Length: 119
Image 1 (cartoon, helix red, strand yellow):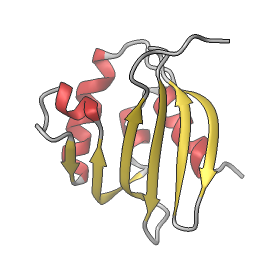
Image 2 (cartoon, rainbow, N blue to C red; image 1 turned 90 degrees about the vertical axis):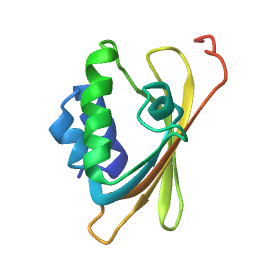
Image 3 (cartoon, helix red, strand yellow; image 1 turned 60 degrees about the horizontal axis):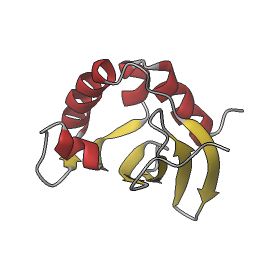
């Protein structure tokens, strides 16, 4: 059986907006510095699946080489943190909280301040 983390990585690495959006709850809260960089919210926060959809459908074409290489998954009682290296070489820690339907209701991404050398 595929884990939540495996589904998430497969959806994002597959670059299919509908598959990505299917992972998130309608009332999702999504925080990322890239939200602000794309000019979608000054504070980097999105509220609701419709706002997330605009972000996903805007970001995917702009990052044609998008690739998330898993480093690890940390599981808590009500959340987990995915640690991965993105296409730019930055290490990312992304925290997800889930609702009763196992959909992501809260996501917050943090990035290393500079790309790390691959070993």
